Length: 296
Ligand SMILES: Cc1cc2nc3c(=O)[nH]c(=O)nc-3n(C[C@H](O)[C@H](O)[C@H](O)COP(=O)(O)OP(=O)(O)OC[C@H]3O[C@@H](n4cnc5c(N)ncnc54)[C@H](O)[C@@H]3O)c2cc1C
Image 1 (cartoon, rainbow, N blue to C red):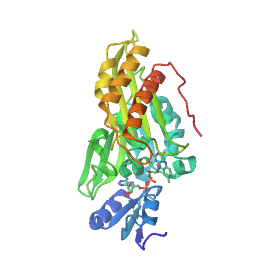
Image 2 (image 1 turned 135 degrees about the horizontal axis):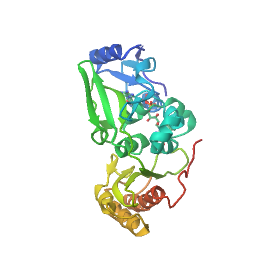
Image 3 (image 1 turned 135 degrees about the vertical axis):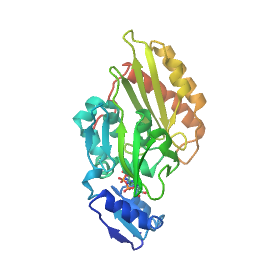
Image 4 (image 1 turned 45 degrees about the vertical axis):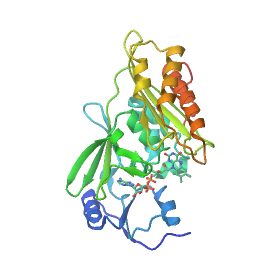
């Protein structure tokens, strides 16, 4: 199928795009990489009368390092640019590892971090990465900008905190403390598919190898990425061995509400939560290979 007819605009500045969006917010759609929107249009699940293409706005793309060490990423930055960025790999290695799981390289060449976050598929990697890293989104409208914590940005399946006249402009990832460790695991039916369940985790340790903080995020299991605070708390003050890891994994499975769909039952997803939390924590603790998927 082909999409219904629409007008097309390609503004050169964010201000121009915001003014156009403000004037047409009930009938316009924003085009980023098109990897989710174009299929939606072709299937006629959406019929915007105007498509506002963000691809010609240089200010929306790029990766920079702020003075405080945080990473600021333009919403139109492609998945692949983040995956291949050496500075990102050095400062936020979870991003490098997790982006390799997004679809296939051709899709990562076009798809953008902002498009993925705004599409808000509960099984997508970016919303989970952002929640794990406690990222902060900058949303722009003709009236100005506001910031929203990643945890408050995805509200449910294909639903976000964006108002109808807002454009996601950038994402800020706070600097990682020294010695932070990470793990990322997911299970999908075929290579490149969305995750049935995935887990991202971060472990902060003191000089005595005791855990000072753990953040465990599960995605694909429910309708948005979820922090399992109880499982993270169970690790605080402990040295990370198999016993502590298994206990945290059991707690995570008990606290995460899972959904059933045509990919998997809720019961199967609960099993996966336990297994993948165990694997991700083992990976973070250095008990298994870091790069289980590698870059393609
Ligand atoms: C075969 C296939 C497999 C895939 N597998 C995966 C996978 O395993 N994991 C995964 O995470 N993704 C996967 N994807 C989706 C892919 O990552 C897309 O890139 C992503 O979901 C959308 O990004 P996009 O830049 O293409 O956005 P678009 O498709 O252009 O836009 C998506 C939505 O976001 C809105 N939007 C875009 N940018 C902004 C903005 N800056 N501000 C406000 N709204 C905006 C658009 O209006 C639209 O509603 C897959 C896609 C395909 C086709």
